[in-house]
Amino acid sequence: MKEGGQGMARKRCEIICVGTELLLGDITNTNAQYIARGLSDLGLDLYVQTVVGDNENRLEQAVRAAMSRADILLFTGGLGPTSDDITKEVVARCLGTELVLDEQALDDIRAFYALTKRPMPISNEKQALMPRDGQLLKNPQGTAPGCLIFGKQGHIAALMPGPPREMRPMLDNLVLPFLRQFSDGGLYSRAVRVVSLGESRMAEMLGDLIDQGTNPTLAPYAKDGEAMVRVTARARNREEADQLTGPVIEEIKQRLGRHAYGVDVDNLESVIAELLLAQGFTASFLEAGSGGLAAQRLQRTEQAHQVCGVCLSAPTIQALANLLHMGPASCEDPAACAQLAGAAAKRLNTGCAVVIEVRERAIACAVSLDGQTRQYAQALPERGAEYYRVQAVQSALDMLRLMLLDRAEAQVK
Image (cartoon, rainbow, N blue to C red):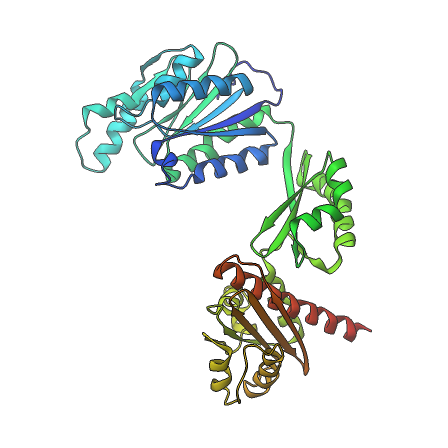
């Protein structure tokens, strides 16, 4: 493919997604995320993403602003046949080139309509207009071909259709291979997952590593009920990246201790499923007020059929106690969860039972594992039912994880 005469230096990129439907929230902008990941894999710099509606003046302002910051502009959307599809016209004008009819593009569009046994509207001929001295990007998935435009000031613009099923193959098969020439390596990331430790506290414990990190760099993130620190290295290949990130990850694990529950793992429940399987346990969950969230999470793991036992869900802890033919279980008594967990482990014939209670501005949980029981209760600030559910489930799952770790370590000793 044409290289645009730009040499082999790494260039700065910018993403511009065009479409009023994106601004109104009618469509989720998954294209920007997908493109950003592709650029990251190539090690290309990306500092700005823009969403702009189908307005000629505002789009031109966005393009010219991007040209002042970046060398490579990646567009999605606005390549259709209607009057508000203006991306190609505006970008060509900004980059100082003109559009001409491309017979190959027109033949491809006609062939697409012939394949679907529909007549081609005259308006679709607009989609066959391509930049002079540009590069056609074929689109077997639809009628909107993309293109590469090479600007007079050295800019390169890659225009791709908006629908993800059309944009993604074009990006993967045509655009990213073209852009690889401007990369001197890739960005390789690893994620350390952290539980029972807030993002701010985690950042304090890793402050010097975050502030001083250049290659690799560290970035802390908050997630639902947990936190994460992403370690990213620029390297020629994965092996070189692992050599850079490995010592830093070990230092993070040393500092965070058991709060760091896994590296490059999917989630907390997947780690717990592995521990349950290794120790030969199945876990039963009895949940009051959480909507069965903990059980749902464990049941989505690959090992669910081996590690997930009978699970019960009810609005109140008393309803759960009634199912097990127990006496009154006061929701005001923190020990109620522990009593229920011990009884459930016996009556459900499982070595592990987890009880979770969610009520307004308070949570409680207990785990009975191999005859030992631990309990936890906490009052919470006013943040809504979903927050309470997540916090209760995370607390219970982490308690189960720690008990499994303690048991494994005791067996080794």
